[in-house]
Amino acid sequence: MTKIVVVDNHGQFTHLEQRALRDLGIETDLVDNETPPSAVDADGIVLSGGPDMEQIGESPAYLEADVPVLGICLGMQLMATELPGGSVGSGDYGGYADVSVDIIDEDDPLVGSLAPKTRVWASHADEVTSVPDGFERTATSDVCEIEAMSNREKDLYGVQWHPEVAHTERGEEVLQNFLEICTSP
Image (cartoon, rainbow, N blue to C red):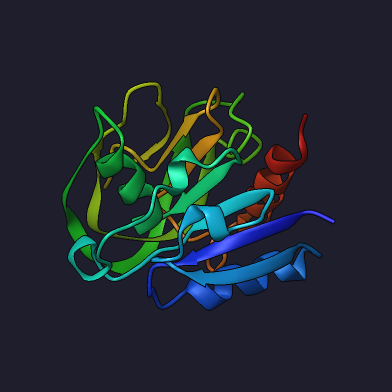
C-alpha cells in the first residue's frame, strides 16, 4: 500500500490534509517538521501549510528525499525559499478566500487535469514571487501570479491553495493526482 507522510508545519488545516488522504484510502503518517528526512519512510511527502515562515523554525531537507513532494501553501513557499532561484514575498490578500485560478499547463501531472478555471480556497498573506530553478508555473490567478508550480524532473510540486478543504473544487483530484505521481515508475 502507498504511504504518504504529512509534515506538520503547525497550520490549521494539517489534520484535514492527513484526513483527506486517508479518505482516499492512502496510508498516512503525520510527523513534526523537525523530524529528519532519514526517519521518514514513505512513497511521498506533503509539506503542510502553516502560519508563517518565521514560526516554523528550521526545516529538514525533505526536498532532497528520493520521493515526490507536494507543498501546500506554506509548504510551497518553503520549496521556493529552500531552492535556488525561488523567492517569497508578501501578498495583497491575507485572509482565506475563494479564488478563481487559471490552469496554464494542461500537461502538468498535478493540476493539468483540472478545469481551465477552477475555484480554490487560498490565503495570500505570503506567496511565491519567483519559481525555483527547474520549476514551471502551472497555475495563476488575478490575485497571485504563481498559484501552482512543478518540477517534474525532481517530482516537486506546490499549490498555493488548500486542496484538502471542501471549498476547493476538485481538491480531491489534486491529491489523487499526487498519489498517482507517487506510484508512477
